[in-house]
Image (cartoon, rainbow, N blue to C red; front, side, top):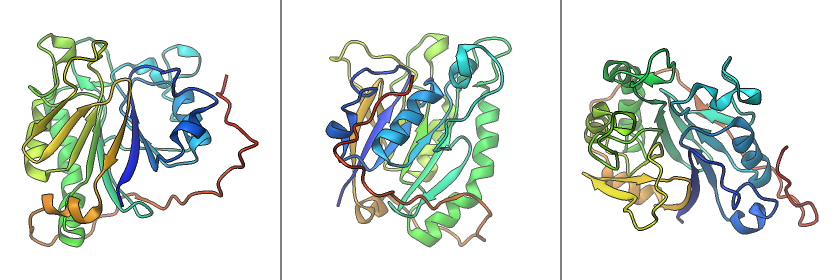
Length: 254
């Protein structure tokens, strides 16, 4: 049975940040945050939909601070950070991974990265990805990032170009889906999705509901790999809470 995911990025959408979101999006199984969103938005979705929320940071350091000022990053409650990690959601049987931020274009920006920094994150994820390919028949189902791959859904200006390293990651590990934000598409006639090898690369700005294929279909993207010892990494043990009654509509947090 397909999994319904809602992916959000870059801007709070009043259609989602709404007391009626549970009525309209109650069929959604998982929430994926692609960066540049305030913590309260993801916390609201976690509460309103009672679904697991996975996210990466965007390229603006103030996005996860309280009160909108720069300072210590505040991770949204009830959500799981995918930045530089590989996570297996056992309940949904989805394997997810993520990379935060964007290519570096400013000074003293902690959430902007050089290509080598993305390769370093990638190197730390490789053992788990190889184990997944051996154990589950696929390395990865969904890659969640803020920036797109270079030359795929990105732009030529320095601030909105993609990571070259992500192109190599997609070739190596072949996730079925790569979801990202960063490039704001206000013109809805502009194409938001491209195929890169075996991966659907989708710009989710400001939100999109995506139907994820079943595990059996996703496994077609995998190749056999040499067995690797299982690394110590995060597993998601999220399980759904009892469904709320219809008499208790969700209200946005202030």
